Length: 302
Image 1 (spheres, helix red, strand yellow):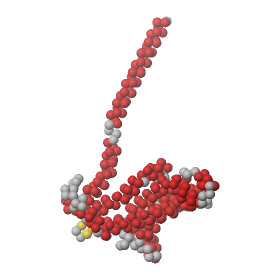
Image 2: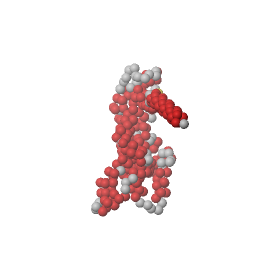
Image 3: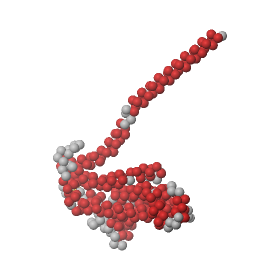
Image 4: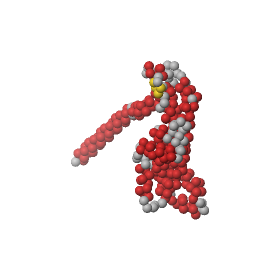
């Protein structure tokens, strides 16, 4: 019996050792397989980035070509690089004034939208009143309608007040779309600030304007940055309302780019150079508020 028991123990030990050996082999194979797979994981994101950057590269490539080279051949690099297209934009007042006009009314709209949205968002985040949720939803419904719906009403209204072809006309028109979005973004950030901070400030003798500017706004600086970014981007790329409300003096660059068609055809190189220059302000804004946008994603408001 003792010999049989010892034999059984030896068999169990051998089986356990074999099982352990097999498990280690499987783990080793799995690790090797993962190592081989990790060598190829970067291919998909790399291809995705290339696909995204290809149109931007092609736009830059075309901006340094002559119109004849663009039409005649398809090349990855310009055979005879030229700065003619950029020289025209920086020396022709009808071109560079378009950038000045766009930046002017975009900054005006951004300041007005955020200034109006800050107290409204504070009210929605701190107080409960009759119809607050319905009013909040009604504000957001303005974003559901395309800008074309409001082009004619804006034109007739601003014509009556003599505001056609002015920067303030475009800035105020864009507020209809940007203020609701800014209120929604800022309300989310403000709701994350404890109400005890408000009460403590009032106990310390702070007036509301002083508390709001000195204490509360620095706490929601990320939200203000995100709201400014989205207001900027909407006003910068919007064309229909801006073109409807302007004729000459306040015409934006997007409207100016549509006049590159002539009897000789489309000036592709000039259009590409103008397109490259329109990307720069947006890229700069994204660079400066990139951390704020990341925080906005973390809070679920972007």
